[in-house]
Length: 414
Image (cartoon, rainbow, N blue to C red; front, side, top):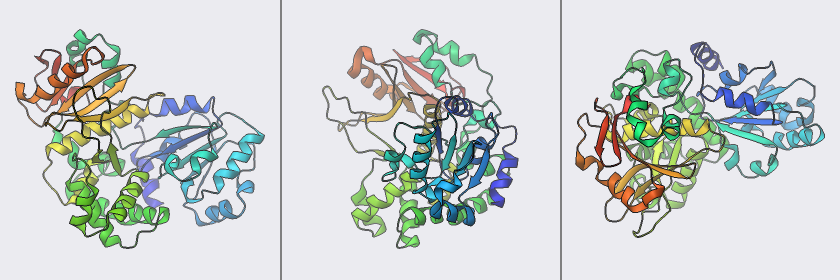
C-alpha cells in the first residue's frame, strides 16, 4: 500500500484522458468498472472523481474477509461506494447485482480491478446490462506532458483526408527521443519519478515480484514461477511477432496447453496484448493468428533483459497509445494488423466509423518508398472503404510520400 500512496503523490496534477468519460458514465450507469494492470493509476483516478465517495480496497485483509463472508453488509449505506481490486472477491459481484436490482441509482458503485472482469468466468454475466466498463492503460505521452490526452487519432478521423498534413503540423507537442520513451514505459512511478535506469530496474523487479506474480497466482494456478518467468521473457523477446504457441512451448520447455493457459492469464491481467488479424479478405489468403505485444514497453524490456530498443518496441509504443485512445471512445474502434502469406504486412489497421485506416511504423529517420509498399498494396486491396495510409517514422518529414500515404514524425501523432 505504501507504493500505491506514493504513486498517488506522483500523479498529482496529471490528468488522465479517460477521466471525463468515466464521470459521464457515472451520471447514467449504476455500476462503473475500471480495470487495468496494477500501478497504472486506477486508484488515483477514482479517488478524484467529481463527487465524494466511500472507498474500500480488497487489498485490506479485513475488508476482503467481509466481502467474502458478509458481502451484502459491506455494500450497505446510501453513500456511493468505490471498491478497489474487486477481482479478489468474485462473489461480491453477485451481491452488487442484487443491490443494483433493488435500487438502480446512477453512480452507485465504482469497481476497480487488475484483471479484466469481462474475461473472468461468470463475472460478465453477473453485471450484464448494469455496468459501463473501461480499461486504463499506462500513461500516454500526452498525459505525461500534462495534456490529459491521447494521440491525435480522433483529430485525423474528424478531418478531411487532404488536410491531414495541416492537422498534424498544427501541434506544439515537443519531439522526444523514442528510445527513451520505450525504455521508461508508461507506468506512472518509473515514468514520472525515477530518473535513472538502475532505479527503474529495481522498480520493475519489485513490480514483477510483488504484484505481477502474486496477482497471477491469485487468478489461476501457476505451478512454477521460474517457468512462468521464462515464458514471459520469451514473449517479450517476440514482441510484434505472430503467436506460435507450439514454438513458445518448445523454447521454454512447457506443454502447449500450459502455454495457452498462461498466455490467457497474462492477457487477463493486462500484461499481454493479442492483436488480431484483419479478417476481411477479398483476394488473398491472410495470416489469422494474433500478434503478441506487451502492455508496457519498459516492463517488456526489463523482462526480456534488453537494453537497446528495437523497431518492434516502437510499434508497441504506438499500440499502447492506440489502446488508450480506444478506451476513451464509447463505441471504440477495432485495432488489428494485416499480413498475407505472400509477405505483405501492415502493422496496424484501425476500423472506425465505417472506415479503415492502415498504419505502418518504422524506426527510421528517412522514410523511403519501399517503407510504404505494403500500405499502398493494402489501399489497392480494400478500395474506397480504405482511407489514407499513415507511415509513422522517427525523423522530421511530414508529407505525402506516395499516393494516399502520408509520412509523419511519430511525435506529431503520439
